[in-house]
Length: 321
Image (tube, rainbow, N blue to C red; front, top):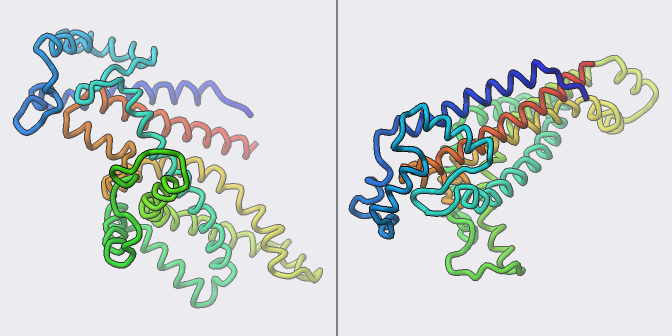
């Protein structure tokens, strides 16, 4: 596997630009997080004394010029020290890792079903491209791909609430249920994950369907298919043995890119279903004006997005060689 220096330099520059934006954005929010948390109706900062607040200012360099804050910020990133959350008074890395399991679980499950359904329906639609099913299925999924994730989420939320009452519509686990890895808890967690996963699948599935359909149609129309038919092989054998094998290669790269895209979609979906993942944590951090936590979450998203993009780009270029 070949990796060019230009690729590495380009991604390093992009990473530096993005983390610089990550530094600037929270500071554009003209609100002191301590003043916000001290306001009426919030109890998060009830344990903070004036001395502790002053120590926080010194710790993050908020009493220093902006350029010094930026240098401290870069140092903290490259040393892996993301600091402490102002609103939750815990290390940022600890908070993120406590929520990431919830997000990664629904992202990977939705990616699995997205690829599986995309391949299955893409093959069928390509094979029957000239009849009503092929034409209308393509039109339906093109239309579905244009609907925003939050609208799909609200639609599934309403359907789940009124027509499938056995499925929870909020949270990741039933309140006050003792968290132990037993059958009851696992089933409860799976039930809470069904609607968020279904939403993410519906959001991303049309893209895989259209990609698979296009690749399969291109393969079906190639000369070797007619030669195989002339030899007496069945359509199913030719589709599965030859066409699918050739058409599925681009899906590997697309699957990697979809990890980042589904992860971004989960930020919205988690807030629709109040699912306790990174998306919900991001909302809590925004409302609390918690700069360190906001920066930590954004940094995590950037690393995932740039990482999968870098790997997929390398795979693409090595396929061409």
